[in-house]
Image (cartoon, rainbow, N blue to C red):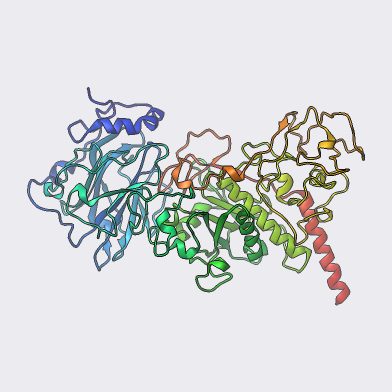
Length: 639
C-alpha cells in the first residue's frame, strides 16, 4: 500500500508537520503517483547524453530539514572564472504543497530568478514560504504556485539548463532519475540527518577534496555543520565539544567556518564563544550608538563565567579589523527609521514602522547566520517614534533590538554619561539573555522576584545589582521598585546606575525561596543576612519578627506564591542553530500567542517567540530629568 501522501491523499497540516520525515522516507522514488503534474518532466528525460557540469554551476550543499514548516535550502556554487546568472536554469526536486500539505519525492520544476552567482561564489536557494520574503545577493527564494522545495532525510535535487542536467544529487531512499541519465551513477547518498535536534547539518561537496563531480555518491560527505553561502570547510565528524554551536576545527589557527575566520575573531578551544553583530541607526540621539564602555561591561560579565563574548560594531572604535575594539569586519551604520519592529505572525509592519528583517536582509552576511546573533540599536518600538519599550528579542533565537531612543540620554560627563553606558549595557545583556533562553523570572515569566538576582529581572535590569546582597541595603532595589522609602536610582547605596560601579549579571540560582504567604523579614532577600540586615516587606520602619503574607510584586500580580530563583548561567542555550527555535530570519510570535501562523526563515522555518519589554520605569526618567537639570544648572553657573 502506498503512503497516503505519496498517493496524493490530503492529511492535516499538523500531521504532516510531525510525520514528514517518516512519510517521505516511505515514498521511494518516481514509481508513485505525484499529487501534481510536472509539465516538463517527461520532455526533460534523455536516455543518452552527459552532464554538462564541467564549466557550469553545481549543487554544493543540501541542508538538513525535518518538519514540514521548516524551509528547506540548498547551496549552488559557481566554480568558474566568470559570473553566471541563474535565470537560464531550472531547479527540479522533491517538494511540499503549502496549501494542501501534500509532499512527494516526485520532482517538480522551479524557475530560478535573474540573479548572478559571482565567479567562485555561492548562492543559497530556499523555498519562498511567504510572498514577503525578498532576495538578496546571497540568497534567493523559489516557489511554483503553492509548491516549495522540500525534503527530510530523503529527496533529490537537480539543476537543468537547455533540457540537460547540469548537476544532480539524490539521497536517502530516493530513486529519482536525472533528466540526463548519465548525470548520476550508482546508489544514493546516505540519508540526511532528520529529527528535531538535527538542524544545522548538511551533505556537502567538501572544499578540501576539491568539490568532486563524478556523478556518484562518492562526491558527497555528511557534516555536522552547514555552511550557507560559503565554502564547505567543515569536515565529516567534526564536533562542537564546547557546546557553543561552533565546530572545533574553526577554533584552531588556520581553521574557518564557511570562510569565516572565527579564530582570528577570538574563538578558542575549551571555552564557549558567543558572536554578536551590532548594527546601529544613524542619528543625533546618543542612545543609538553602542558605547564601547557598555559593550565591555557585558563582555566582562560573561568572562566571569568563562564565556567569551565577541561584539562586532564595525568601524566605530577601530577603522580596521580589531577584535579588542569590537571590529570583526561587520557592524553597520544603517538608515534611521523612527519605528522598528520584529514582525509577528506573518503580518506586515505597522504603519510608520520598518521591519527589523529588512535591515538584517540587507546588512547581515548569510554566512554568519548559524553562528552570529544580530542586534540592532534602534530608535523606538512605538509607531510614532516616541520613547517606549527598551527592546525586544527572540526567545531561544538570535535576533534582538535595543530601543532606547527618545529618552534624552546625554554624553555629558558624570551622571548623564554613566546612565547612558549602564542602561545600554543592562538592556543589551537583558535582550541577549532572551536569545539564550532566559525569561524575566529565569525559567518563567514571573517578574520582580527579589531573590532572583539577575539583569533579566525588571527589579534589577535598570537599578543594577549590589555586590553584597546579604547586607542591610540588599532590599533597596525592592524599595525602589515598590515606590517606598524615598528610593531613587541615583541614591542607591551601592552600584547605582548613575555611577561607574554599576553591576550586571545573570543569576547563579543561589537565592533561597521566598514564600509570600509566610515571609520572614530576617531572611532578607533570600541571599543571606549579615548582622542587623533584614528586608522591610511591610514598610514598618523596623524588623517585624512574625511571619507576613505579602505580595512582593510591585505591579501586584494578584496572587501569593513561592518565589524561586533560577541558575541562569548553568542553563544558557547557546548553540541556537541546533534547535527548532533557532536562527530565525522572518516572523515571530508574541509569548503566549498560539503557534499556528507560518513564519519565514531562509535557513529554517521556526516557531520563534519574542518578548517585548515594558517602557523604562518612571524612576529612570526621573533620574534622567534630574541629571539634565543638574547639568543645566552647572552650565548656567559657569557661563
